[in-house]
Amino acid sequence: MFESLGDRLQNVMTKIKGYGRITEENISEMTREIRLALLEADVNYKVVKEFIASVKEKALGEEVAKSLKPGEMFVKIVKDELVELLGGEKQDLNLNGSPATLMLVGLQGSGKTTTIAKIANFLRKKHKKKPLLVACDVYRPAAIEQLKQLGKELGIEVYEEGKNNPVEISKNSISYAKENQFDYVLIDTAGRLHIDEELMDELNNIHELILPDEVLLVIDSMTGQDAINVIEGFNNRLKLTGAILTKLDGDTRGGAALSIRHLTNVPIKFIGVSEKMDGLEEFYPERMATRILGMGDIMSIVEKAESVIDEEEAMKTAKKMQKGKFDLEDFLLTLNQIKKLGPLENIIKMLPGAKKMGLNKVKVDPKDMAHIEAIILSMTPEERKNPIILKASRKQRISRGSGRSIEEINRLLKQFEEMKKMMKMMKNGNMKMPF
Image 1 (cartoon, one colour):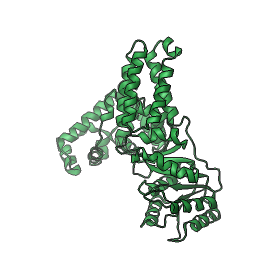
Image 2 (cartoon, rainbow, N blue to C red; image 1 turned 30 degrees about the vertical axis):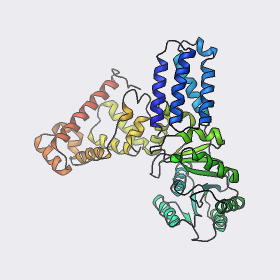
Image 3 (spheres, rainbow, N blue to C red; image 1 turned 45 degrees about the vertical axis):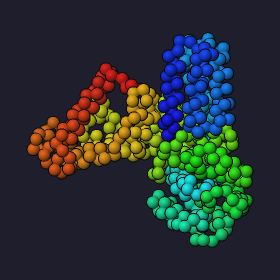
């Protein structure tokens, strides 16, 4: 997510921190590099121009000149301006309706149907309430079947009337939701390859009939500068309440995300970070700014962990670590908890200082974790609790059972022992984590 832009901006921030004092000359040099980084990331030229002017004005102010650490003050200015550019405060969904009604719109190929299922899953997990998915895309082949399949996968009901009139379907779905005590109604509307009158008339008719609490535009983050035209096209007719940027896990330059709020005043409410059903995150401007600048995003890691990790199990494991009684059985449980967080390299990148420590380039092959799991599962409960008994004959049996080599088994055991030593050092206060 914004890796190229992040790398460029982080290099600039590192350089400016090294300056003993801030001058007009080095501010001009730094803002020139920032300008190039933003333009290369496909940020709108007008947005870049205003952003740079604001950074320059504040960086040349008296407060920076008198600061003991002017380089750090400059970094703070860039971060604050980036937060402002991304929308300032986080914008929550309006869920006050009874039932709360969300209408998703967008062009074909933006990931709208998958995204509506992700939102339903998100709302159910976060608020412990009952969502209803509504299939109003009656034109795209297999759109209804796709939504039904996603609903089945998540255990969320889908309301559909086949190829009937989408306006009538949306009206009937609200009545059905009230009768069956659903808390949220999420309406999946039709898309087109481009904005046309027929599409907008249908969306307007649905909007006027059901008066949704939220009208959310799903937009592919790889659309680039054209994203602004798409948003304005929909917003002029429907008055959008928010945007959802999909495919931010891909090779996107990120310009759309940095330009949307400033140019259209439509807040970004969610971002799609993976194809999985839990691959949707609420959009926090400050957290995104700190990620881009390499300052980390600990809050998102904590929230992700809280949503997927069994707290009771985690506490038991932590106590065992503190007492030095952590064994391979506990290690396997921890591994399974970590897997729930999603791709490990994505979590590592959110750690403060990840780039400085070279962790942003770490690639974790899911197969490696599967191999470790296979080795441990091929051990007896006694061997997992007391790995010191693993002599040659036992290792050969484990090798045959797991399909992994003796060398891999030895490497795992060595790494496990090193990890235990590190835990012991941390417990005794002889070592601090680098963040």
